[in-house]
Amino acid sequence: MSKRISALSIAVLVLAGSFVGISSASAAVPYKACKPAGSKSTINKLSYTCAKNPAGTSTKLVWVSKPCIDANKSYLSAKSLSAAVGTSFESRISSATRLKATSTRLIAAAQKNVDTWSKNLAAYLVKNPNVMTSGTESDKKMVTTVQDGITRNKQRIIDQNANIVKLDAQILEATEGAAKTANDLASAKSSIATACK
Image 1 (cartoon, one colour):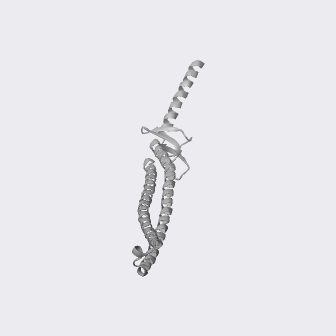
Image 2: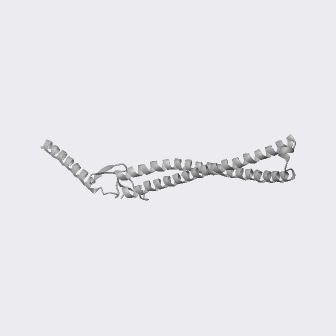
């Protein structure tokens, strides 16, 4: 008789355990309170984990779907990558902006040389119109040196203007890249709200 009671008791306990498992699983409701953290459940054929909802501000444990957890992992990965990429873009913009300022200063200095030397040479040639034909070798060399200097400075202006065009393109590319990175991060973040409904 005692063996029969023991067997029956074991059967009841196993059956009760089965019912507890069923009631526990059926009690699991998406994004409703749960415990303990990390426990798993399947609701409507979808895997859920007891965790904090990454789309909410509450620190309470709720049943969070796998797509929600995956979306949050993707967002955190994108956020980490975005910070590094954003820093790189900012560095490129800052560097190109500094180089552009340097080019602008070089253009201003070269233009000043062109203006000053051209004015001085013109005044000298008015006073010495035949210097290149009947002037001394020293005078001819001086005129040639000034003319060469004017030419070099004009070329410097052309080169630096071309450099500014390239730098502007780099700044634009980096600015657009930074904006795209920010948009991608915002999309990844918004996907959490969608996946965590």
